[in-house]
Image: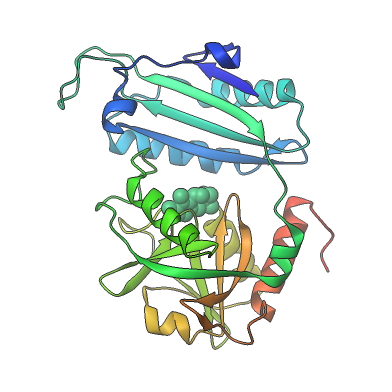
Length: 282
Ligand code: PLP
């Protein structure tokens, strides 16, 4: 595994952050998770754009240029030597005596880790996954990819305890997204997903999948869905860096469609695989 702090690669066990880092004490920071396909970081610019945006929204200083990040990420991936890797980037406001207000003249703490990416079980992809809805307890700026993940952690744990794969978050009766993914449904042949805005993280995978759907001539609607419309959808699926395009066959014990991945999710998953080079277009 590869570790990097503030512009320097260093041995994993030496890669530590001081106890007064504001990421640790306040969750005052932002992050990204990028995966490789065939050893190359996927949609790197989209992830780095989102990192810049998240940092900007919190008045965090993003100290490195795009070229510098790209160079370090590629260097790290090469050094790690994994078939496929998961790159984690994090910027926190830095180290300062604990006080809520921004500390003056403090340099941000920038961390990168690179770990092996286990391939997603093919069997799970074929059968689809089961899910449950959970109350969306998050704050009003879910568009910022902040390290404050407590509500996501609690929802994910609730899902695990219930023996299901993902928690689908519901705010005031409307589906926002998953705890680690975006949620899409198919209604009468159209793909419907929550609109970009403060209620969801604008997923890099979400954007690419919507482009794939458009290219395939599938109509798209960006609007919030009720829980009831989730239950009665023809298909439900998740998108995200780790889940890619993943069919959901059950929500809260209710079977979606036929209980097997439907034609639209299969078509989009196959286009996704073709795009990422995982397999030829079927
Ligand atoms: N929504 C949430 C809450 C997430 O944590 C993630 C991260 O994977 C996503 C959506 C999907 O985003 P992306 O496709 O950029 O990985």
